[in-house]
Length: 258
Image (cartoon, rainbow, N blue to C red; front, side, top):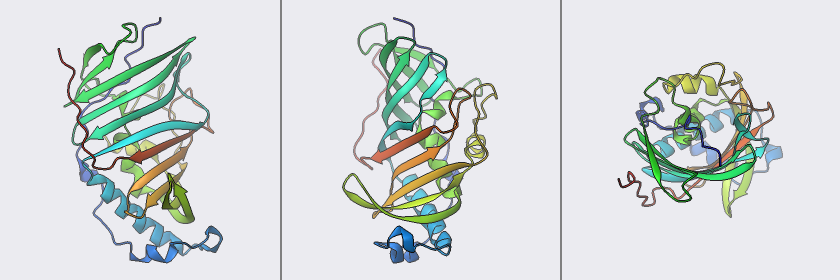
């Protein structure tokens, strides 16, 4: 079995000061239950306020679960290495774990990652079990590739910076009502703001990417869908979807023993 490259891992989550202060969303109630066809350009102000408030709600969480899937296309780090699914947990301020399904040339492998206080461990896919390898601080060189695996680092900080947001209507996500907001985002600027500016031969992010964000009745973000490439090897019509759940539920993330 091929050895898994260790070119994508995590470092400490940066301070939450980058997110804006909370804003009121009283007018958002007007759109509860309103069909999408009835929305008008005047909804933009309300959509912006809803995003700002939802971003603040997400910032105040201590923990959450996430699942990242590709609705269209594939997340390809480079030729022969594809990420088919990623699922994990975030415990703030500096703990993160994920399980990834990776396709390497002709083999499918499951890889687990744990980051505590900036130190990273991954499982050795050749061991046939959960034997972790200590790979240290992957962000020490200045580029932190695992930012692209942790939604707390690359997509949530962009929520309250969505351009031209509009309320697109009401939808049901996992049996619960939610409000969908459409707009565009500049992920390139978000990554720079977050202290991660990847080399051009790795990253290829458009200046503007379509995004849809679903907000539930408790003002939490339950889904984000963004269209466009992040890596040089990805197609322009790639669509990533991140689903969020288990908000503030007890989650224990500890460094592997030994």
